[in-house]
View (cartoon, rainbow, N blue to C red):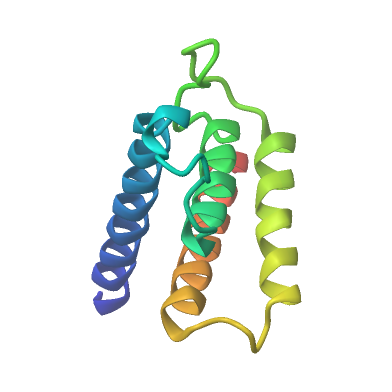
Length: 118
């Protein structure tokens, strides 16, 4: 049962990070950058964008344009496959926190995908 609690903690952690990044992105526009430059690139922001795409494809989040929750397993698989490719290409180059974050979201999304497909 310890695995279930660990999974829930990881799940909540990446949801929190993804939501924070999403809120930051929504609240920022060109007027927010005094120098005209965008913020520094962020690995967690990149990952959270792909996580959001996967969750939309799994029908677990509404599509930002239609505001409807619809399942598209192809869209979810594409986002998950992109996260896997990112993990493969960055192997050995991530901080411990980045690696843990990517590992946990991939694990969680794969479980959600299998649950939705089954």
